Every structure is written in C-alpha cells, then in structure tokens.
Amino acid sequence: MQDTIVVRPRKIPDARLRLICLGFCGGGAGSYVPWADVLPEDVELAAICYPGREGRFVEDCAENWDELAEDAVRAVLSAADRDYVLFGHSMGGWMAFDVAARIEERGGPAPRALVVSSANAPSRGLTVQDMFPAQRDTDEQIMHWMETFGLLPQYVLDDPDLRDMALELMRADVRVRDTFYYRDGTRVTAPVHVLSGDSDEVIDARAPQQWRALAAGDYRHDVLPGGHFYTPEIWASLPSRITALYSEPALAV
Image (cartoon, rainbow, N blue to C red):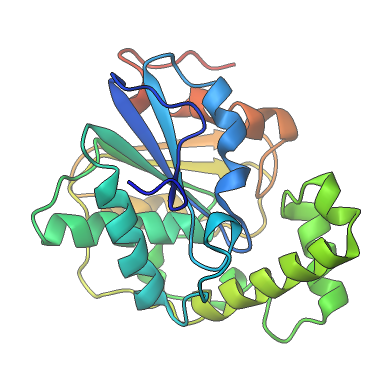
C-alpha cells in the first residue's frame, strides 16, 4: 500500500477488519478520515485517494470510468491483505459495486460486504436524475451544490484558490461519471448493504428492489434520516450503521 493512495489515518497492524472507502463525485479521502475515530478499535479505516487530488495532486485525473475503476481496483487490492468491507457513497457506490464485481470476476479477494450509500442501482444506467451536478451547470451552480451538499470543509470555502481547485476537481469527476456504463448481467456475490436517506430526492423509489437484483447473496436496506448526505450527525457516525463491521450488529442510534 502506498500512503498517498491508501490513506490510513489510524494504522492498526493487527486489525481484524479494514473498511475501505471509495470517494463520491468531487470528494477525496479526507472526507472519510474523521470516521477513524468512530470505528471499532480493531477495524482500520483505509480511504482510497483517486488520481488528481490530495496526495496524488501531481497526477492527471482519470479521463473515463474504466480508467478510474481500474485505478481503484489496484488500490483496493493493495489494501486487501486482510478481511475488508468495501464502502462507496453516491458515485462511489457505483464505483464500489464495479470494483467488487471486477475483483470477483478475476478471482481476487472479495469484500466481506459491499456497502453502498445514497446511490441508485447501476443496472438502470446513467440517467438525468443521477447527473448532479451537470456538465452544463455554471461554476456558480456547481459551487452552490458543493456548498450545500458536497461536504466542503470551511477552510476550502474561505480560500478562493482552494475553491477554484475544488470546482476544477468536481468538473473532472463529473466528466468521468458521465462515461459510466453498466456491464449487462453484472452481479456480486458479496453481501450487499444499501443505505439511503429518507428525504433524498435523488434516489429512485425503486432503487432498493433494483439493488436487490444485483446481489447474488445476502441483502439489506436501511433508511436513515436526512438527504443525500443524511444529517450531519448521521454522516459523522455512519460506520456505526454498517453491520458488517461488528461481530454483532451495531445498535441503532
């Protein structure tokens, strides 16, 4: 594992399990770092950094979905030297599904569970409902979305140069997202756990059933308070809702 690609804020040499997180559109590994403090003591957080940001800033951003997916496969496999749960939020949910499927197809170590958060089922393909922000949006519209929903840290919002960088990164991710395609017939054998917000207007009402069809094994769907990023309190403690991280299911808060 390279520290610039697999970010482990609290390294646990004898960890029982690793939670590997894939980023959402415009996001980075840093969005998940605070979760290291709310995980069980024997579970290590590993947040994957995509090219073109944070510790990989000098690299070019991926040009299309396949390029980013293959980069993510390599990163996840480098961190799969022990049991792991694979997590993705929004666009990262599609990426986590695709990465898990590619690893299974190649005979690699499958995750103990695949957890997808605030994501429509990839089998329906890319729709207008999923294209938020959109390539046609103005800088002002995209920045408004990022300020409202994108979890931008305050220090980024307060710095014009960092705001410009965040905007450029979001546009790069949007271009990649818009090249997404579902490979017909793709399913995963790992247990699938879907999380969604009760007031998330982005998620199709049929998404739970559509995700169920993509799970060849166990399946679970939990509805949580809030919108696309839930409530701040739920987001901050989201790992406590991932039952696969616990020897016994975590109690609802």
